[in-house]
Length: 389
Ligand code: ARG
Image (cartoon, rainbow, N blue to C red; front, side, top):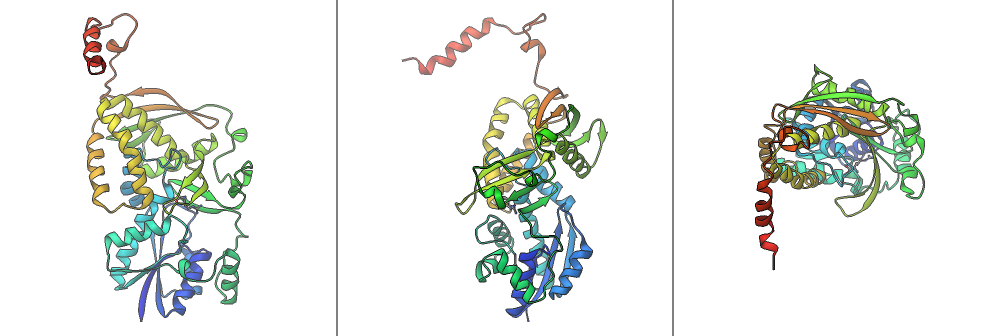
């Protein structure tokens, strides 16, 4: 019997995928990854069993997600189109990697996913699989079957007695992991009206956000956050805490008209308090500790890095080369950044580093100035020389 490994969430799409693949004659093995969403392995097991899945792999990948995916993106300051911290995008190559591993373990020739034919995720998962093992065959039921709406999928599931989530019909399409939440669809597709309060997933709307400043201090070592308010904490704990604190202060929600890989423009809302706080602090520390050529290079590369993550070119030489360069740049990125959060704003309030390139005796307008201002005249003349006609 042909065997397929399906990336499985237990939601409507992948539940229908199981039945559809079985009807095509496949033995269906499933894989579910915990990247920090609400996640119940027991629930998944029950659903998978009821759907006719022959074997289910459940993996907690939060640590790998943070160490090998989130940290490089943080070091790279990669943010897509200025507003998207790439939370959903980043999870896809990781899922692809484990899909391939399980396919090898199970000696399956096929892998499958429940991504739509209009989105980015099909591109990311398939590019991930292709680059890791070009020999695997990929099946995307949502591009093939004639269930073209949510309603038709529900009807199909009911007809075949497939397990449906107990939750009532969802208003929005939501994807969640520890690095952020993506919310789209429903009334958000209407660009001319204010997003409904129910589109706020956990970040508080500004009028309900905490009405006092919240102070934080984050310490970094070689570009990696290591302590929060003077206490060393595992990064997973820090991210969880910053998500809660930031959300309470209304921080980290963005609203983007986004350019999808396949050319469609779409509207998505993101909530990612921890990601924004950490990017902000990391960038501040880089300004303090990196020479300007390195800093400018990093600004140039940040959008390239974001674009590669967005497209799913994770397992490529290009990505590995950028990583090597960025990794090398993080040597001096050590020190602490103090921040204030208030009503959606992140403000820097203090900076300190043993690698600081800021020299008060050079910058000062007060007593103790050590800058030799007589050098400036010649410097400017030489600087302007190429432009004099
Ligand atoms: N637009 C985002 C991306 O392509 C998120 C996609 C999933 N969004 C969702 N609401 N289910 O990375």
